[in-house]
Image (cartoon, rainbow over all chains, first blue to last red; front, side, top):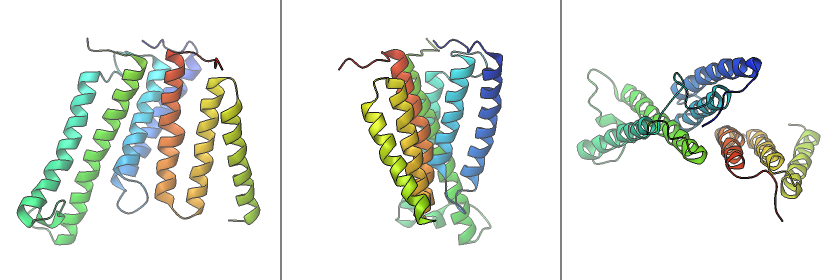
Length: 146
Length: 81
């Protein structure tokens, strides 16, 4: 249980800064194959924005809540996205994470690599964000759902 | 980068590490560890390892600092030794 911060200025800054961090995290994830950054860094930035909301607005909170059950499920979904994409290449083209084997119709190999890396990075970002938030909730003993 | 700026960063790195080891207040130690990570990130970026520096800035200066502060909130702020 974290109390909301008493000062409205601190809470407003936490809300606004968290939104800015989230937009930058999405940019880092979706621009990760051209520039430094990628799934791990973007996921850690998303988790940082959720930490900021937890400290500012208090937790559990009815809008900003990400209960432990949901965060474990999101982490599992991210891992599943990564694994399914990788194993698909393993079974169709005998290499793990072979993006050329992805079933994307009407695309050249370069475009298949492009979309494959994007899917992998979205999965990594989801898993990293959810598991970091779950670690924080365990540290603060926040059992929001039960 | 200018060699003088780099030397300043190294000096600052050593100072923050010593302060984080020696200070009595654990919250100050956690914040100083975050500052240490950030200076390390700037040095990594200066070595043209921007990806490593970015990871260090996000994880070392952001997430680990939050975890340390959470641990201090759940336990105590003063060292016993």
